[in-house]
Length: 107
Length: 116
Image (tube, rainbow over all chains, first blue to last red; front, side, top):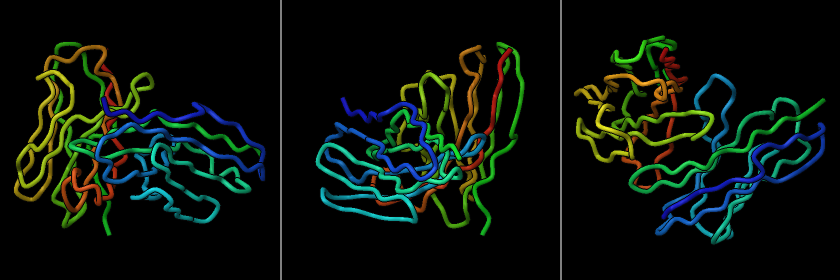
């Protein structure tokens, strides 16, 4: 069965404390791995798409990487405004979302 | 550029009633997909419409239905509401179909449904 899981469920960081979020997938015929950010009361907002193992993409303090079984979202020197839920997703006939990681960055 | 618009933003219904939610996609986007988001189950795919045709459906009962109009606007309907239908319902639009893998989803802010 196609599945996307994420860890940790919640992460609390001090401002400036770098860390990584994990997304593990078992999806046959992967057609891309997406990362979204969701703020409370809003819909998810697109961050990155990765298509092949070894691919990396960066945006400000975020860098996403992809292996054959996992994707990582690295957050370097986070700020309080990075606090949000981060979702990864794999599209097939439908989009399979992971449960998300709730990130809190404390000033 | 206008984003994805969902109406209403909040609504309260009682068990047994039905509800219709509306989604206006970004201009030029032909695919609209719907999702249910709850704290326990996360984001769950409901269905996708492309060129007025339902392309795929998630594992939800037949009480959940939808349609898409010629201008790509979409509606979803839930009949005979149950307490467990309380959730945030999100729609997303994209240029092409989800299964291509290349299409970024742009989400609306959601319709929060409370069933009493």
